[in-house]
Length: 125
Image (cartoon, rainbow, N blue to C red; front, side, top):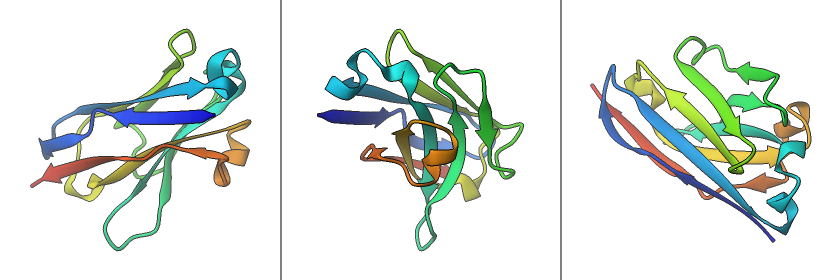
């Protein structure tokens, strides 16, 4: 059993910040969370889901979409089985449902095995 639960979404004004969290639980992650790369994706209304950021199991490698570079930071706490997405300087175009996902490598996050249920982020202008 695998569970990824996102939290931290909400309504914020443009220029503001939010911090998303994704807690992993279940047998698969109980002692092997650090074996999994974690990623954040988002899907805006009427848009395709897109990759936002990813981090390797150790935390040593990261990936960011060009649209969020310099504004978003992905991090993880393997002791707490949690991955974070710090979002600063938010723009209305960042409005979307944000999902976390897990797979063995950053590359395999192109088609992740595990998904959370999503958390809504709304940025007002």
